[in-house]
Length: 211
Image (cartoon, rainbow, N blue to C red; front, side):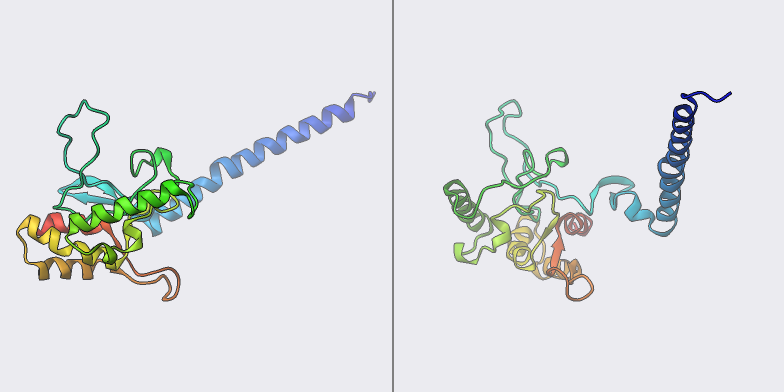
């Protein structure tokens, strides 16, 4: 004989069955299906756009990296990083100590912030001295971080600015280094979205292979 508790029990059993069904569909079947499609159609992208050198993964085409000289005193936490002149340098990063994927984000400083203004001025002077150019020629992306702090791209202007410095540091023909930059120049997505850009990680990997 039915009791007043019967509808309550039935509702909960129905809810439990639906929970199990949708857990299997959304938590197992769907992710496995999408993973299978991605691995079959886009294996490189599905695995993080990994970049390899001599059979070893050295980075990702999606994440920028720092290219600094080793610390003079590894035990000194106050020692500031020094960019390595042999590599194309990325734009500044506000993610942790720089390009830290666990601390992705921007500086959150507004354009009128005094600290940001001073930081940009200091960066302009440092980049100009490092690349041997007039401070007025330093492009904006050499002075400001991206919103994520992980963007591996720089503008063609910033890449071109660094050619002579990289060529001199490596004893290479500037024309050969400039051709390498041109080979890694990416156009606008679909021909009209975004800006022309150069992936610093891919470019430096090609530079490593060049010599």
